[in-house]
Image (cartoon, rainbow, N blue to C red; front, side):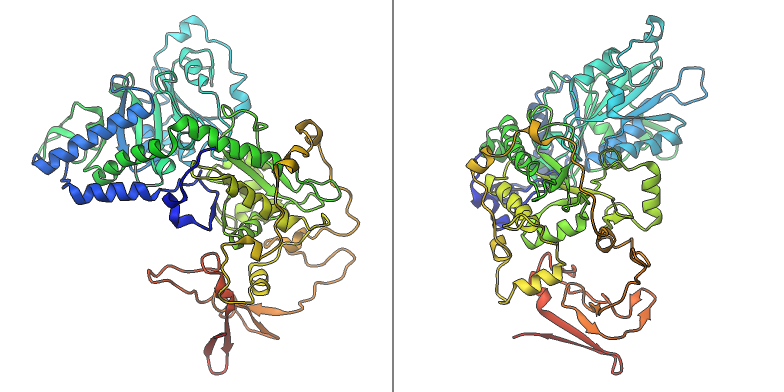
Length: 613
């Protein structure tokens, strides 16, 4: 494991950050090196010719070289085009690829993509459809069956097709074979049996955050990346690495500032710049952010020793966490979690540092990811929940049909919300991911959280409590820090001896079936979207108490009767506390909000806010 000085990440002391697949965290030394650079140098617009502008231009070209060096290639083979991020790079590919549409004398192009792809890849089909080009989704298992060669006469066809797949799934961390690149380009693998020449788009955004990529060996035609996934800073900056063999074939219609060698304002005349990078970088690039990349590479190398060490470090943490997590059992033998993975976490070449799962109860029913997220927040553990902008993988692992997705939308669930269960079925899951600054303590803190909240000392289930209930009961002192999870519940320490006593993979991977429940499942009570009109046995549901929360995240206000407005209980969650920037605050950022007690007098139309002290 890497030993990273905690002084480099002062901002996260007391926090267990496990969303590195969402964004890396930047070290203090990166910010200091960057700000010192800005204090000591004047960087002008690179499109000017003065001294400060020349310095900017030269620094940008140096950063291009550093990027190529990082991916083990040179300017002879690849061109770096700066974009606002990986998504913008994908959009650029879709717009500029030399598609041949349906209805021409030539065979038409196809855009094929793996279903385990980010939304931004699948969204390219919107552009291809407008160009009358067909899109073909391919499941991971199907690509392995595509090993038959085309007839020799069809191999001579030059119609360009594009196949896109992720080097690493952002959902499960599965690493798809980089050998597919050459197999598809050579014709050994054929995503769709159609005459033409295949080009490969390797979505490397998730992969390069924790693994080395050698483009000298694996020469994909397009590689989009986002730099915040690697360095944490700057955000809003990415790049498209284009293989120089395909670069001259790319088409471009719009031309922005800095892309033209010459043009006429009064006539339809435009001549592009010779450089592929300058031709596709419309307007002034984000030059200060690009300069920050230089310091990003320097600091990353200094802190870690390189991407191979990061790969081994992050995988070791993921392997340990997976091993413990997958073997946690209730007293009845039921698993505590269901892990969504295509591998057994035994090889860092096929599995990245991502673990995707749902928490189960003793009967094998899924607990909603929003509940898990809320509980994790109380322990200062930062995870990611939902479908992670990857509906294809979500459907595959959670066994959700197209009809399920459409019904969930009709029920009010949209991507990114906190509706975690619809009709008792999960709409998403929980994801944890490790980065180079992650530690063994982070892994243990997370595992202790799962154990403490799901297993009591006698291995019986502890029900999830609401955020307000738990914080109100657990915080007698309004100065109690929430950085230590042991203030909330007993923590079970996991030792190396405990890990050795865990059953082997072969003993635990059998298909477990939950016992038949003697009483009715409480799933409907957990689901916010599935409330039955009556329970089994015909007894009606009785409202025992009414609570409203006039100020979101503050304490509840109990009433015996209350008017209903057009959005629910009148004045319920009508207000929020904001910080000095006008940003709304919740208990996730400030747990002591639960000690603030608002109450409403309907007759006087006033709200009174009280807090002890």
